[in-house]
Image 1 (cartoon, helix red, strand yellow):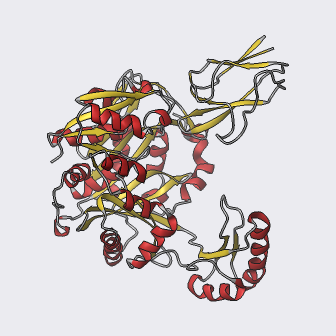
Image 2: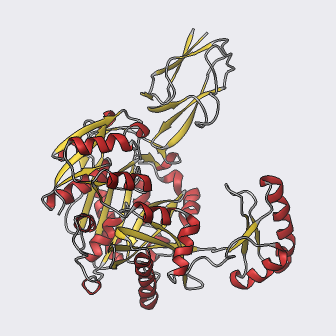
Amino acid sequence: MAQILSPLPGTFYRSASPDQPPYKADGDAVSAGDVIGLIEVMKSFHEVKAEAAGTNIRFLADNEDPVMAGAPLADLD
Amino acid sequence: MLKKLLVANRGEIAVRIIRAAQDLGIATVAVFSTADAESLHVQLADEAVNIGPPAAKKSYLSVEAILKAAQQTGCDSVHPGYGFLAENAGFSDAVTAAGLVFVGPSGDAIRLMGDKVSARTAAASAGVPVVPGSAGRVEGIEAGRDVLTETGFPVMIKAAAGGGGRGIRIANTLAEFELAFPQAQAEALAAFGDGGLYMEKVIGKARHIEVQVLADGSDAIHCYERECSLQRRRQKVWEEAPSRALSHALREELCASAVALAKAVNYSGAGTVEYLYDDEADRFYFIEMNTRIQVEHPVTEAITGVDLVAEMLRIAGGEPLRPRQSDISVKGHAIEVRLNAEDPAKDFAPFPGQVADLRIPGGPGVRFDSMLYPGYQVPPFYDSLLAKLIVHAETREAAILRLTRALNELTIGGLKTTKPLFLALAADASVQAGDVHTRWLEGWLTENAAALAD
């Protein structure tokens, strides 16, 4: 199992905008390089990408959660 | 006079408003999110209320939480600062409906100026020049040809239903116009299901010039203009007053037009009327009116000696406008630069973190508006503005020298900031000559950004 960590401190978002579906749902398969969420830091948005592939992603951070740099965002099998 | 003020903001502007209120003997209440519990505005206010979690939507943008805090602490008034709820007409209405004084204009005035079309109409009927163009939709190419007598070339043809830059064509000649108009029509129809177009003159190289107004609901005055042409991604980074581009006669005309608009809409409080100024044509055009105190207000305070935030509080307290137009004169030249927690060498990447050593510049003609203190943890959840350095001197040349001197005194340890950008701009020949326009800085950055490492 691997963890996806937040690269920056800020606010975590699961989708590109409030009216769009989440990038990934719990249980989804993930390819290396897939966007799994956004971190908003000081009003600018940064994509969070999976570094490795996995068959089952489970989110640890909720949409709009404040996170620190290095905080675990999701577990990935 | 107001007795107890809730400051519905954070950062340097909350500190600025708390200081102005305390100078007038008004008690202050700060509000803060859990991310801001250690903030300077919380420490300086007489009382402070936690209004929610870090996300602005759940704290600084929560009308309910802010009104509850105001009522719990017995406030009689609310100052919105800038950003957050400052230009939210519903917030102004809600504050008033709760029996409190909103330090700013009525919800109706905010609504009128917040809508592009109604603001343009209000400006035009107050005699303020607007960007030449069609009055509304252009029905067919023949009507379009008539509009050309207003706009000249180049002209922009836009989809009435458009947005995000789609459906825009620019024609430089009549031949191009004859081709572009039907293309734009077809494109608009395909993209938006509506072939309606409107037309506007293209203002090529323009300066951003804005006029500060103060009004009490019946009378209005101006405090002259600011020039804010140095912008990146439409964000001002360097502001100064007065503008060196305007002749005496045009300055008076520009400022009088802003007063006419403020009076026409029965404006109350501090406001800013923004214009584009076309150097070549020597003409100005209304863009919009901001119904709040602005970030760059200190340059106006420096050259006029008027405390704009104090005047806002007095007007909100029911006093008639104190300064008369004949009291307002320009003394010297002032420049403000915005020190943001951003790395200018890395495409202005945000840089939250902890302030290590801090040395604040001082001496004659130097003002530093900020919420920083040594050890302060800059949270990642809000705007990157850390501090505003304002310098004032007899001439523009002396102000630029003083800016360089003050920047060299300044140390903000532990963070990347935009300080290297301003040292480089102060040394640039075009900036020194004032030979800039609103798109100048972005071009300059493509050449110079890499050299802006701290």
